[in-house]
Structures are given as structure tokens and as C-alpha cells.
Image (cartoon, rainbow, N blue to C red; front, side):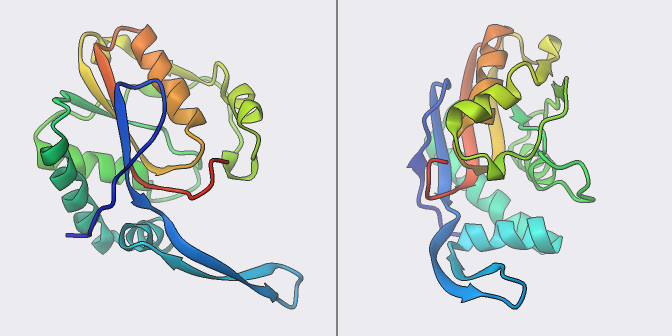
Length: 195
């Protein structure tokens, strides 16, 4: 099982955690022949596993991340009844890490996956948008929830990578406004910056 170093993540949930930081360090090495910056990036154990799954489609990384998440949840004991994954930001990925991980986690925990959040409009990837308020504006009214799946339930809102929390916070608010009893949040990793 991959080691965890949980950190609290702020948002409109009762309590939320990321299991570890995504990167340990990143050192600028200079620019390549095309003028693109190059970095020597060291990732945490979970960060490397997530990187391998997300960018190398290495499904062998799934079990260790699910083991880590399930182990943490067993200690945390939030008493959640369903898992709601944050919708993927990119539709062109053949393998969607957040959905694959959430599904495997549900199988491990023996609780349902509630894939109940849908996009109501296209949203650009937020990883290059650094202003939190601009992020919120871009995702305003971008999601809808199927209330029949969440009403009265204790929900675990799950994401693979927590950055500023704008998307998770927006969805948590929507879940609570639409009848979820309580929302807890869990991300596999988080970036070091708040942007």
C-alpha cells in the first residue's frame, strides 16, 4: 500500500482531506530546443502512481491508490453511504482516472457509486487558470445533480487531484443545496500551490 500523508482541504464540506501532495519538488532545468521549460520533478509515492495512471494509462497503479484511500477511510470513519466522483475535466482521455479510481474504491468499500453530476456547459481545463475567482466564474452553473441519488445521503465527493478546490467546492455546494445530508471530500493528491 502506498504511504499517505493526509492534509486537510478547505471547502463547503464537513471535512475533507487529500491523501498526500502530488509533488515533493520541482527544479527548473532550463528550456528545451523549442523554448519550453523543462523540470526535474520528484513526486510523492501517490503522486507518481497518479501520474502513471493519468498520463501513461498504467492501470497497475490503481490497486495501490485504492488501498491507500480505503485504508485512510477506515481510520477517518466519515460514515459515507455513496461516492460521487468529480466529473473529469478532459473528455478525450480513453481512461478517466477519477472515474476508474472512484469505481474501484466503491467496489472495495461495498458502497454505491453515484455518477450523478452532469455538465450543463463546456468548461475549459482549469489547470492554466490561476485566479480562484476566475475559476469560479468559469464553472458557475456548469453542473447539475440528479437529486434522487444523493437526497438524504452522506456523500464522499471524490477527486484524483485537488488544486484550488473551486470545482469540488462548487459541486459540494450543489450537492448540499439539492438535499445531501452531509458531504465529505477526498482527493488522492493535491498541488503545493493554492492556484
